[in-house]
Image (cartoon, helix red, strand yellow):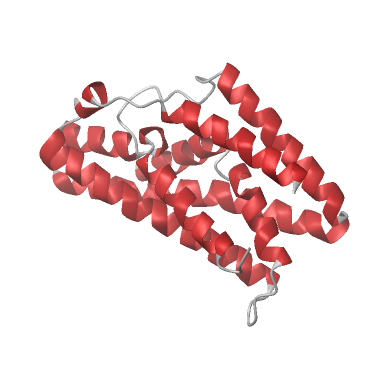
Length: 204
């Protein structure tokens, strides 16, 4: 594998999170329709992205700290097993995520909701193999801490751009009814991908 693969994986995962309506763009569109203002859609995307970023940054930070005290092989096995167990759990309990009680939310509420939703979906956990890849690759000019910051920011930027494009397309052109006409169980795909990532990490 080349040094570029972890960064490409970060962008790909960010795009996938941006596509998934459960990660925030559907909430943003609903708020825009409620206020009947396009700017409400855009305004809600930033706190949603910040909550997601906080969730991912927490996991990435824990992985970097764990690397300081645990042997690489032990950390890889523990992380891989955690991915498999979490992915299987999400397949068995697909609706195990926070429920928001209403649409009257502040920007701070959106950050908290996004943080909880991203954590419940294992958004940061899925980055575990990628973070290991960044650490194992000797990238000139990067310190481990800076690698982690760059990884989180790149991932979140990819998600934010994707969310913005989809939410505006749905708000301006398609309408939320598109979910009924073109439904795809992204949660099941995501849970399966988590299990696969854990298996690949465990046996490579």
